[in-house]
Image (cartoon, rainbow, N blue to C red; front, side, top):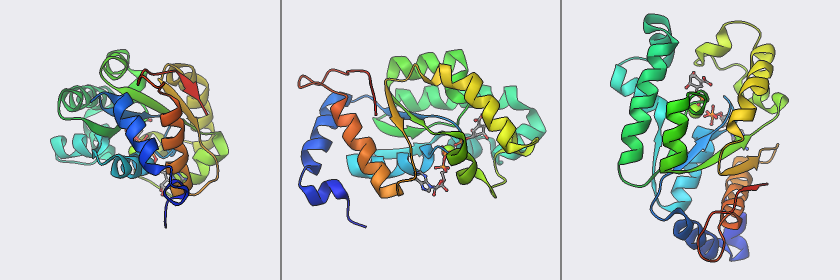
Length: 203
Ligand SMILES: Nc1ncnc2c1ncn2[C@@H]1O[C@H](COP(=O)(O)OP(=O)(O)O)[C@@H](O)[C@H]1O
Ligand SMILES: O=C(O)C1=C[C@@H](OP(=O)(O)O)[C@@H](O)[C@H](O)C1
Ligand SMILES: [Mg+2]
C-alpha cells in the first residue's frame, strides 16, 4: 500500500529531517511485547533507508536456539546478559534501526547504553491492543507463564514508568501498520528542531 505521507508529497522532507536529527546515531524501538517494535521498526528502517536489526533474532543466532529455549535452558538472567552484550555490540556498529525485546530497556546497564548511544522511541500501547497483538502467539516465554492479561497488566504497571525515559513517545492505536509507520515518522520529524536537536515529545 502507498504511504500516506508519500501521497501528500511531504515524505522526503520528513525523512531528511529525521536523518539530520539522528546525526548518525542508531534509532532504537522500546516498549512492551506486542507493541509493534519488530514490525514497525522494520518498516521505519526501510523508509529511512537504514539497516534493520531485531535484537531478539541476533540473540537467537548467537545462542543457536530460540528465545523460549534460552529461557528454558539457561534462565532469564542469562538471556538478559546476552541481550545486553548483543545490544552493546549493535550500538557500536554502523547506524541502524534496532528493535529491542520488551525487557531490554528495563535492565539499568542496557537502558544506559540505549540512552547514551541512540535515539529511542517508546511504542506505548494499552492493554487491550497488546493482548490483541500477542494472543495466539506462543514464542514469548514470559506470556506463557500464566494469564497473559494479568502478566501484561503487571508489566504496564512496573515497566511503563521506566519506558517513559525514552527520547520520543509514540501512542499506538488501531491504525494499520502503514498508517502507524507514517505516524511514527511524522512524530519523529516533529521531535527535532530546525537545527536537528531533539525535543522530547509524545504523540
Ligand atoms: N498497526 C500495527 N502496528 C504494529 N503491529 C501491528 C499493527 N497491526 C497489526 N500488527 C501486528 O501486531 C504484531 C506486533 O508484533 P511485533 O512487531 O512482534 O511486536 P513487538 O516486537 O513489540 O513484540 C505483529 O504480528 C504485527 O503484524
Ligand atoms: O518483554 C520481555 O521481557 C521480552 C520480550 C520479547 O520481545 P518482544 O517485546 O519483541 O516480544 C523477548 O525479548 C523475550 O520474550 C522477553
Ligand atoms: Mg519484537
